[in-house]
Image 1: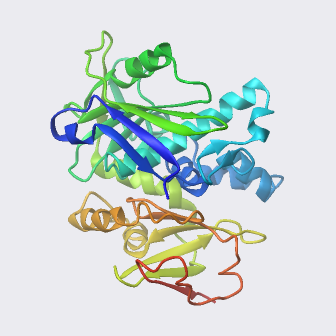
Image 2: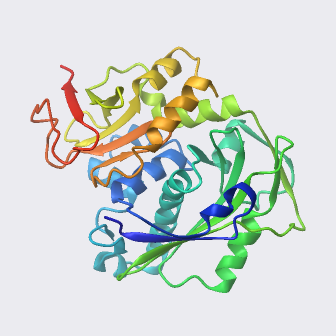
Length: 342
């Protein structure tokens, strides 16, 4: 059951058929996975502070538990309304960033979307021309085409000034590794106490100040997975999750070893390649992406799977910790088997 609407405008050429309205369902765990994937800071750095409790970390990481409803519609709660202005700005920013990752996957079919700032700092992205005033994120799709996205979150209706500013930032990146991006989108999430909507637009003006980036696809993909999974390469998984019909295994790691019901997962072949240092833009990875697309909208509010092969699961009913080895309820269309690793 959908809980939000995406308004898609101004796409051209091979993307023109996207224009129009699309209903989708975005859960809190979806947005959490989006934030984990594209965040400015390597998320495992927050685990190194022993003073930070699980609840503190999860609230910092997602900013969602108390502030968003997902049923029947994606909306903000009374707790959000009671926040002071500075906290509201932070929460709306986080929501906008997380939603943009999910929209990029489902609408534009972009598996790999990352925040540019962190990539520039680590040397994965080189800024060859221009300034830091440009789109938040760059993405790579299954055809090796580059994309740019500027993400915003608003609780008030986005003004023309908001759209103009987002448009100006998105369109500034004119070249990535010598090629024009396939799309240069702004993604504005408008969410209030009554409803939510996403404005997805592909600007077409030529900017006065241009930004050019140099990125190597294989390095971009490795940086993407390292950022999410780097803390688990040497760790044995806690659970194996098998999708029977698709013949795909995911390995799941409990994010906190004690008092945690949050599991981070990845398709087994991807982490095997990462552990061997052989991940890259390969045909195997492309075929995996195509299968993962079928998982994009399972409509299970505690399980989120991206077309990058990354999974986030919140075990609210303690299915795993109670050692339930098989759980098909709620997943009749795919078939599911849990295998508990002891």
